[in-house]
Length: 585
Ligand code: OXD
Ligand code: MN
Image (tube, rainbow, N blue to C red; front, top):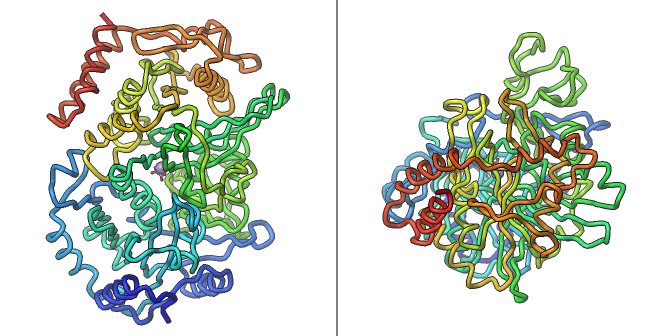
C-alpha cells in the first residue's frame, strides 16, 4: 500500500509501474525490520551473500555483472531542450527522442520482479538545505545501498512539498550493455537509469542527483554542487577549520577526507574530522562565508589499496552494516582485495565468483571493487556531520596528479584566479587508466563527468558566486605526486599532506606570508613543517619550484582545451590565461 497521499508521487509511481509492469510494488519505509526482510530475500535470490556475522556483523556481499563494473560515461546523457546547454563535455539527445527510446527499453522490464519505491533525502530531512528524491528500482542491491548512502524513510514523504522531488527510475532490465543508459532530464528533475546494476550508475542519489541534477539546481538557486571532500582540521588550540577538496580519481581523495595527522602533529594535539568524502553542497551563509554540507550518509569507496596503513578509518567504517561489491570472497565469509595486506587468501572466489589462485597473476578483486559503509561508522566522523547548517569553509583545494608541472602547493591570487585554477585542473594518466601513460587529462573542478550543464556556463556560475560571498575561502592547488628524474615520488603523501593543508589554512587566516610567483602565491620553504616527514629542506625546495618552460607548454595546452568551449568561455577566464602567460614572460 502506498505510504503517502501525495498525488504527484502516487500518480508518478503508478505511471512508471504501468510502463515497467512489475508483479508487485513495495513501498520502502526505511525501518530496520523491512530492510532485514529485503536482505533476507536477497540472500534467497542470490543477489546478496551474507558475510561472517562475527567478524563483519550486518555486512553483505554483492557481485555486479562482469560487463557492468564501472560508471559508463559514454552512455551518460544530459537531455535538456537545447543541445548547447549540455555543452561539449556531455552527451546529449533531445528529451522527447530519448524518452521514446527509453520507453521501449523499460516496457515490461520489471515483469516477474518487484518494484521498490525508495523515499530518500540528500541532506538532513526537514533542513533548508535538504533535497528529496524517490528512486524506483527492481534491484535489492539498490535498496540496501540507498539505505546506507542516503537518508531513507517515510519522513521524506512528509518533507516533500507537492511535486518537489527528483524522480528516479532504475531497472536492471537485461543488463544489456548495448542498451545501458544513464539519463538526466534537468528541466524535469528526472533521472532514468537502465540495464546496469553497478553503484555509480544506479544509486541515483549520488552522482546523478547530488552532482548532475544538483549542479543545475545550484546554478538556478545560487549555490554550488561540487565533487569535493569536506575535512575539518582541529589545531592544538582546539579550533576546527574546514577545507573542501576536489581531485580527479586516483589522487587519494578518500584518504585525504579521513586523514590521520602525522605522529608529531598528533602529539601536539592536531585532529582531523571527516565531514564528507565525495560530494559537497556549498552555499553562501548569512555571515558571508561559504558553508558546506555533505548530502550523503555513507561512503562508496574503492576497496583495492585500502588498508590499515593507507586508510584505517575507511577500513573501520566498513567493518559493520556495510556492502562489499566485486571484491574477493574468502571461505570464512570475510573479504579481501589487492592492497589490503600481503596475504592473499587461498580457496577464495574472485570478483567473478570463480575459484581464484593468488599465484595466477590475475587480480582477485576488480580494480573498481567497492565498499559501501555508513558514515557514522567512521572513527573520525565529524561531530558536525549531522549539523543541518553545515560547516564554514576556509579553503578550497584543487588537485591533480602531475609529475613535474605543478608544485606541491600554490594559492590563487583571488577568487577569479581560483576559478581559473579549478578550470585547468588536470591529471596525468597512470598505467591503471585508459590512454597513454603521461598524457594529461583535463578535469575541471573534477566535474568533467558530473556537471549537468555547459561547462563554460558552470565556470561563469563559479565566477558569479564571488558577489554572493563576502568572505570567500582561499583557493589553492596541491600536487602530492611530483617525481624526481627517476620517477620516484618526492612527497610522502597520506597523513603528511596535513603539513600542506596547515599552510593553506594559515593563509586563509592571514597567519603566514607567501612568495608571489607567476602562477600564484607559494610558501617559503621554511613555512612548511617537515619535521618527522622524512623530506629534507632541499627536496622541499625542489617541490616548490616552478619551471617557466613547462608552464609555457601548459598555457598552450590550456588554450587548446579552452578552444572547445568557443564563445561561451567566460571572458574572465580568457583574461586569466592571458595574464598568466604575460607573467611567465
Ligand atoms: C566515485 C567517482 O565513484 O568519482 O566517487 O567515480
Ligand atoms: Mn567521486
